[in-house]
Length: 156
Image (cartoon, rainbow, N blue to C red; front, side, top):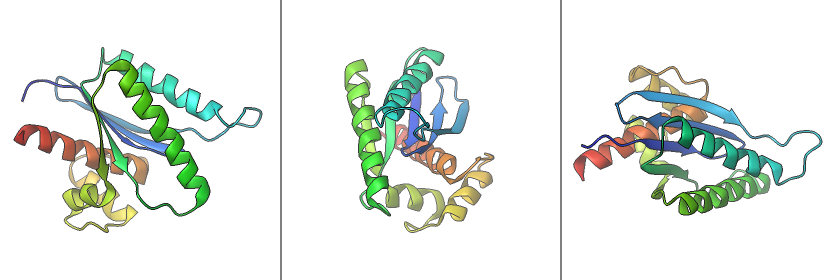
């Protein structure tokens, strides 16, 4: 497989992320985009877009972006937030001509744990079994998605 830089995202107010760099190293974390006290409702999305640009610049470009495709949300607010982040992400990728792909939650969980309905703790344990120390389940999900994306690219 040629050396590619891949960003995997678990979108949400607490966004998990994992970055596979061209030299094979992994950087990951969990970033908070909670609305701040005196800002308008759209500012979280502008901060998200600025953060994406900072990541892209830190690695001198991205070859692909994968994101967790959620089809069911626990509440209306979560659904609205997810839709906003996904809209910003896809527009940003289109603007920068970076290929992107949504991957169903069950696909990621099954790849990581062997079962498509794995819980948060299962996902954290799966990440730990691969040598990672995720700060939370969002980072663990992004790491699992990154591993799935790498496996897909290696078989392509």
